[in-house]
Image (cartoon, rainbow, N blue to C red; front, side, top):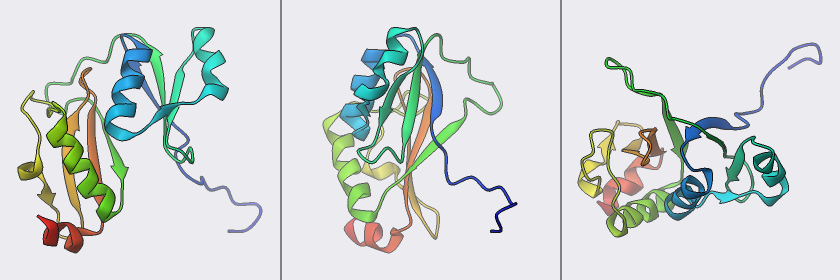
Length: 147
């Protein structure tokens, strides 16, 4: 890319409205390993977002206090997909067995709910506030051999 062209390097963060930011942060840490970023916590103290992120901050969520959006009857709330490698995908499936995780219809989610997309494997779930998520891997053959 030439110096006069613009291009993004990735998604910095996704904003979510939740009733209790710290309760939500605990849920995201427990299931996805996203932890509160102490260096940004002053924003939450001032009424702004509570930032949770992966260790390398390549994935961040900005948790704002508020009501989650009402789902659209035809599409539902937006979906956020997290990428992992094959080992990470299998570890996530193990976590699902240890926790009560549901999909957007309130049904339990487990290994039997893995979707084989041909080039990728995914599993879909929702947080307690109705936000929809996907964990996906392109190590589909590895996952297929483990399932």
